[in-house]
Amino acid sequence: MGQSTLAGSRQLREQIHALRTSRNAVILSHNYQLDEVQDIADFVGDSLELSRRAAATTADVIVFCGVRFMAEIAALLNPSRTVLLPDPLAGCPLCDMAPVEEVRRWKSERPDLPVVSYVNTSADVKAESDICCTSANALKVVESVSAPEVLFLPDRNLGAWVARHTEKKLHLWNGYCPTHQRITADEIRELKSAHPEAAVMVHPECTPEVIDVADAVLSTSGMLRYARETSAQTIIVGTEVGLLHRLRQENPAKQFLPASPRAVCPNMKLNTLEKILWALEENVHRIVIPEEIRVPAKRAIDRMLEIA
Ligand code: CIZ
Image 1 (cartoon, rainbow, N blue to C red):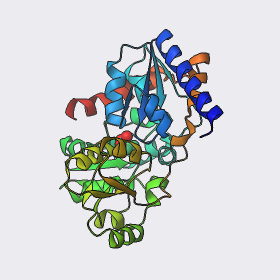
Image 2 (spheres, rainbow, N blue to C red):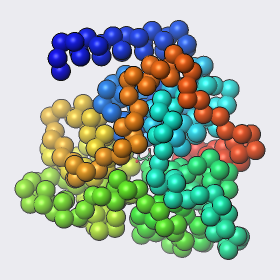
Image 3 (cartoon, protein in one colour):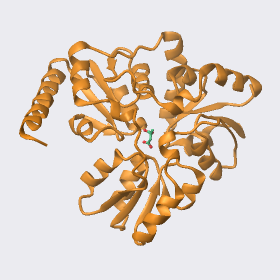
Image 4 (cartoon, rainbow, N blue to C red):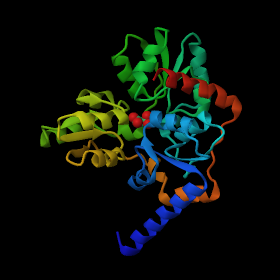
């Protein structure tokens, strides 16, 4: 970085700090955000951890550095706060694969079955769901439902992974995360042959073929724990590359290799320091959920938070 760029980014960070204080704001960042966004955040975590933070905060303003569905969760859990998403276009293609009208049609075909929704859904879809889950608690949530069969949406890979570990029958929606879908078992085998001593951890949004070559299948919070606890000194990481920043910061003596350099979520990278500053200066882009959606959607999230 050149001298003027360095000074510019220091100034940007100072301006954000000043506004964060004067507006009584908190900056929450998902584990997949840009390194510099993670570094400026008050808290970095996965959806479940960020939901808990958002529900408990006393800050007036929550600047949510993640994708829209995550900011929506913060808004529905804590409607008295102003929730800002720095880039309004930061969406989630997995969410978009489950439009609410199609979900209603699916439900109407099996009205007897409970609906378990991964949090990667719109607030509208959460409002149609009995309970939500994240990748950190999906199995526990499915097991908590009393019915022997459930409708699980929208991620077919996460659903297939849960189905391997439960007696319950899961009816799966045919959605997937394009970023995790890009990671291949061949890429991991190649890395393993160059680093035979490496442990392989992958996210349950990866394909079943990728899951079959992994030593551990974990959410991002699970990966951070595994990386701390394993005796392996080299770890192949099968998830969005943003997580490598925290893994390396927290384990400077270990080596982390991305399973695929193509596992980059373009939506997660839309939030930048400049956009965080504009969000705080101009009070944009505010996420507001209408009450008739917020109340049932919150119920599905609350049920998850109770058991998780
Ligand atoms: O639950 C989340 O935040 C996602 C999308 C991934 C993970 O495992 O943290």
